[in-house]
Image (cartoon, rainbow, N blue to C red):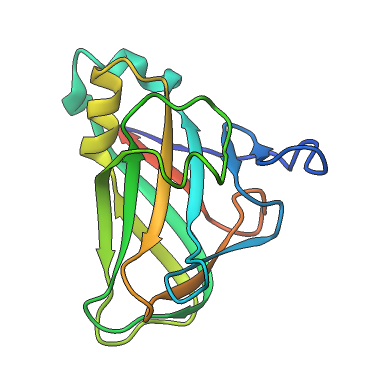
Length: 178
């Protein structure tokens, strides 16, 4: 088995870009954290762009792409029991540029969700399984995807650490059978 963890380099030209390029991922902000909260006015969400081209060899044998997790390293978290953090995958192939005006509203399909339990830690890691959505995107010939992270209600609020921070663990975790 091989295990891939995508490691992201630091921001590139954050002063002129609408989104910040971090290796193969773009984040909406160059801040060290991104707030995800349905209580904010307007509600805030996380937007990610991922390049899947390195996993195209798995198109003909999708079972070999065993697991794809979106891992979120967060702080200042609070959520009521039963509330959800949902990940939506854009229906069209991503253009590689995060845009708060288009990516926030583009049609998307639910890729995975995390349901909060009775007690939510104020900081930690959340892993959301998006394996089937990534397999479907690859099967459709998509090499770039947009992921939108949305809180289900006003009782969900957290700050997701940037994938650019080497001391944090936000990123895409991919496990393959070869």
